[in-house]
Picture 1 (tube, rainbow, N blue to C red):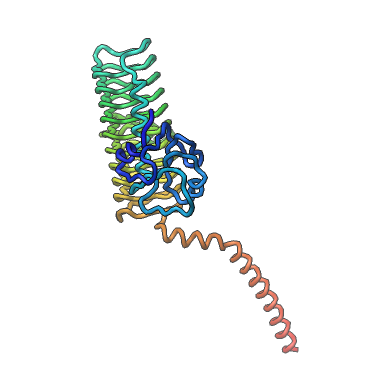
Picture 2: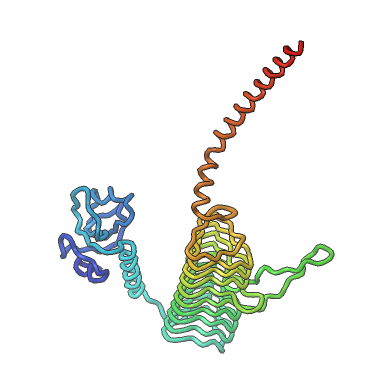
Length: 358
């Protein structure tokens, strides 16, 4: 597939600067752009690659001023990163259309009570239990297991090895990557007088709303009672643990290795960095931003606020504290010098006092 600079600019509402008939057939990083490829420049750290690039077309911001001569045709847009993302999506859709799959492969198991929509693809070794509903145009890959009474919406993709427990509800246009588990038991155990633990039955479910994407090897526990919610537009990375009765607000983003404990409510449009730990039964405000490896054990009420550190603190306080942390070795050394000087001074004073008494 080939596209001209003019065609691409129409896709992304850009302005061509250079040869409108320049053509590309592939997308690439700006560091490795070759003739026939399309790249984008968003981060100023990569600007130097632009001047040496052989890419036919490069997407740049509207206000970008090149410091050197550029041989590539430029397409100027408001946001190069978002524009390139649109092109990636179009490219991916075109490729998938060429290699689209439909029908039911064998061997696979589909219970007679299951309701399968139009143009659904079910790969070999998939297991579809009783009373499951799968919407139109969804793709169920190999070794996916869908428990009884679960609902999968339209235009969903469940990659190999995904496990959906009973009564889970998944909306439209949801993508779940390999080996993710939806609806496993919540971590509930009651301590007993003899020091042992008795398991608390988890009878709720998981509800995943429309336009959610979930990375590989993520686990989302079903509620003890009621539902664990992943709201509309949420994006979850790989290797995330979301506990029972958690409610992740709309259009929030959570990075890898984050753990959210039971019954915590994450406000909409929140951004959570990698390896963040969030304690249970908390409520975090809309737009909360948490830096990587932070620990949250308190409610937040101020919207769109940044938190860093463990235990977490406001960003400005954390930055000030970080400066002090770096100075601690020098401070310790100075204190040691002062303590030694104080000791010598005390000895001198004691000697002078002794001499005066004589």
